Length: 438
Image (cartoon, rainbow, N blue to C red; front, side, top):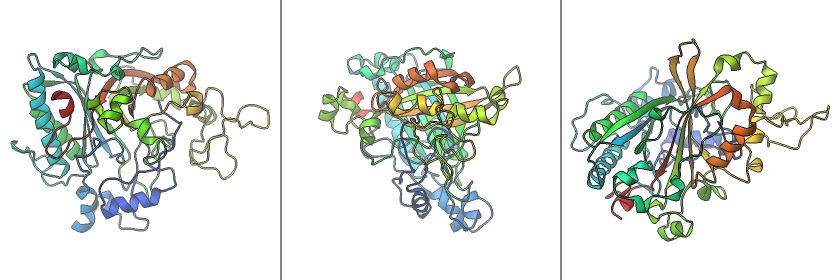
């Protein structure tokens, strides 16, 4: 479910609003953003609660959260390394019959122009606004586009299909619903205002009519900015602090782990198609948590299943005074001679040392879709992971987890998708241009 092999404190976003800078400064050197599930919280200690919770207060205070904007254009697409927002809408689309490459080009141009406008809080060009988000700012909106393997055949681009888009292998615990998996196109919309996120997703759907139709859609949530007095790593629906470890933007090896080289020549040399320069690959998994069963376990069982204390996230190998940022010691033993972190504990099985260095950048959200016929919660994790090559990132880690992770008995993998996420668009271009005009 998670990738405990890296450390990723909250990155500094591409915008420079006062609220974001304060948040980033508060996290530097600490646990940072929760990229497994949960998100982040920003608040000025001792500040006006209205400034971060949306409560009563003057307009200037309330403007901070809504006014934050993340540029759509850049070397990489937005929505990968930016701080997690509180709301996610993920949707897969299939091209309609007869939509070939020209239609896909037209669609990606419209989608890119609309995403760029909405990221600035503007009405998309050529579209009558439905006014759902009329009185809201951009609220850190990001829109990320990906291409599924089937679209290459439909658009006559089979020669450009990356080997990295080889279908994910079956895993022993999978119970996949193919109607809620895969898809020609994948769109990730995130924002700090649920209405802004919904409006953006709905706008993109409207712009796709006639050329692409939704295959599946799901919505997730994370901790809202300002929900805690200090920036803290979020918790998942099992109550565990989740996301302590992730790659750090700017750290050695980060770009090589997450992104295809940004130079086309270097991308080709790395075994990638030149059009993927600056891109990444997204794995999307809907993982239902067996929460009723989990809640019946003792605290000791829960902690040993994860390998961390539930109250503060400290590794079980840590002594008094340890915290979630304490380095995990997989060689530590308890006084009775047993491993401090059990052999099947999640953080041990998912560690880079257990997977020949395999790593990925997680950006997951919680979901709750009501209750199942047996009364159990239909809830869990919308797992999103970005990496330069899923065959050396996600796949080996998931294989190891499927074979020996104690947490697996509390999870059901119900949907899955793999998508090529091209590099970012230039101000006068569109996402996927290098592919579609090749």
